[in-house]
Image 1 (cartoon, rainbow, N blue to C red):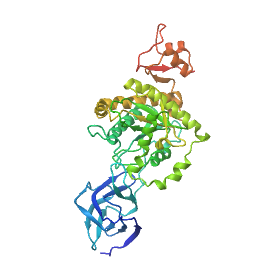
Image 2: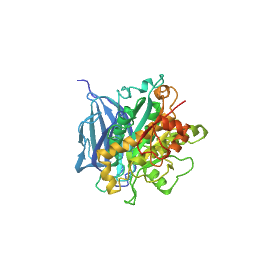
Image 3: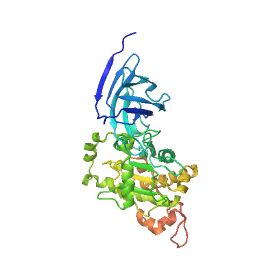
Length: 434
């Protein structure tokens, strides 16, 4: 057998503050792009990290460190990591070995305490097969005539970042993924529309990477799904937000945005690598069309959400959400319910509520794209009529005005007799064209 060879050596140094670090837990998350190993420590520590081959493995040496007697690992062959071992190559040094399924490139960094977490050493592993998978079948054909409208569906949080928790410890990251998957089913069922899940498992994706994935897929819309918490457990209802050009529309909007934006810290993102990119995505005149479309979609979704249950506000909120900063993809964020409210926490786990919420969002998205189909899409080429799902507060006169058709033609197209202006909430109307 050929002798082991050291392939990469990386050394990072941190102050020990005079204390020995204890490693008390190893957590591993695997997503389509990488495998992340997170070591929870009681203190920051000096460490050396390198890879070996024959067999492939990563070696982590932590100076002046020990393993907690109750050391725990959630590892059950996850991603690129097949097994984990530990030992002491010399007194005072703790060695942790990650056995790999294949050779991998790596990146590591230490994170300071934040949220519910203390000091963490993060090791990201990237296999040779990274990027080899195609995305979804329709993305490659996105420039073809009669293409599908592509909706990027982003389930918030995930992996290292659980999001908000309810009184009974329901985790936001789990329920929003279930709603996102339901929403994809509803979108895929619509002729000329296809959904793309930004996250389809329990792993974390940084804010910038979420909207960049949508941009790479040339998505026509980015919808981020959340279920946040508030300090007042009585607060309930769904909300829709877009990126603010100036400031938050309310103190509530600012608090929600601040909470969501902290996810990169909790999720284990080295923020100093992102600052330049985030700074470059400043709002300017070139984003006006994107922001106008975002507002129009948000209004459409808010209108259909009113049919699914209580809304927290009767208007679209504005705040500085990092995940909505795509310069060229219209983007909205939907707070489906307040997980901090005991009643809504229970609803969030129920299939009926998840179905109703995802259907309401899908209806709002569909209404918008039937009004404003992108050129070259199937909807633009094949629709002989627009469709509109009636929301609470809609009137026949208001709908006719919105679509720039006469009230009489709207009545004829839908076989509506009489002179009344009210129409049943949830009814789908045919909007005549030409």
